[in-house]
Amino acid sequence: MLDYSTIYTSFPVFSIVFDEDADLASVIKFPVLYKILQKVRVLNAKTFVSWCIKSMY
Image: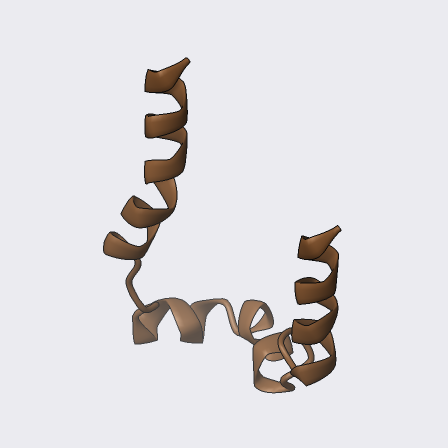
């Protein structure tokens, strides 16, 4: 059980380490994926606060 929790909690660290930005060719090839991000609908103050409240319960 101890090994499971150690490995399970280390995954977020590795996701931060291996995170990289999308290259320009991918953005130009698939513009639909980034349209929502450009409109700032995904993460705004209201969404952030609701995620924080949901994480407490």
